[in-house]
Length: 145
Image 1 (spheres, one colour):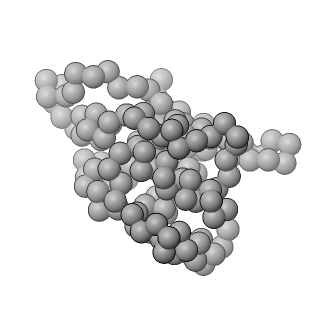
Image 2: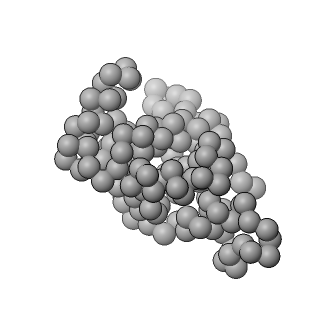
Image 3: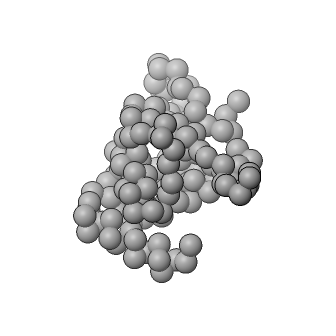
């Protein structure tokens, strides 16, 4: 997709729903590409690009964000208006509604609800073991064993 077309569509989305910055949408697009590569997907099968579920995407979001922003991830997300996994679902479905992404009949916004907490996903990796959350994180990442 041409970058100008992407930018125009994001501005159309933001005119209707200004909760998230342009950077949040660009990040989701990059995180999807990252996730597809990490899963060995993105290849065409029978002429169609393979599908990534909401939970798989959130795993890729986590890994990609940590690699890009490290301990500043939550701060960056807050700047973009993103405060939890559900916000990524809203961004994805805004992109679906305007034709930037596709979904299956099984996909829904609820796929993004409460998959992981931002503190556990983005702060704990940088804390000493004794200071980490007591919750066991849910492995949703395609690159996490």
